[in-house]
Length: 284
Image (cartoon, rainbow, N blue to C red; front, side, top):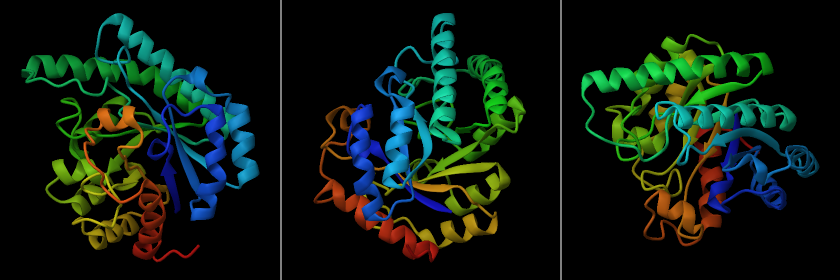
């Protein structure tokens, strides 16, 4: 198991020059970095890989940023744009030696509405239809697509572990797995540990977030049963801190961060990784 940090805590968008952050991440005790690629043209994947190698950190995951126009259940144009975007991320992942594309790889974030059963089925079928060729492409490249349920305020499509497992089963590819996040689960799941146990071998990525998007371990979330559940299912993937602050304005607005969660964003990273290593009994 490796501990990672999502670069959204420090920068948006991530560009090639943002790789200068890697050395600090290593000093703080992180094994991996998660890079949100808002636009594939923002980075030279070979240069980012070289910077990571030099710093001594692995690029553990690419975070798919499903912004406007990227929607696997949207218009024909949006479906194509989203599919092309994910394919490009897969190609970049190969160059960077990155095993996973993670996030809400199904729909533009923020699309919500009280859809009837027929509309929900139509959306589900469209996502499955579009994910199948992407899964086949990812499988051919040795990359895993990790699908993340979000809370009800960020999407109406996929909110729970159960729905995520249903989507994975419908796609039917070993290259499509589940991605769970303690922030979203805190809102949507009756019991986080139970959801992890239900995910079992399908869980391939995990986000460690405070209930307020702050430091994991500095809030009310009970990590004992969460850690026990992850160990019970034999989880070997990354545990990545994905927290946001008011410092990065674009992300703060998108994630509805209107106040400081911690005194400094550095503390979210430094205290967070210490907490994670303590909870999991892993020394650096």
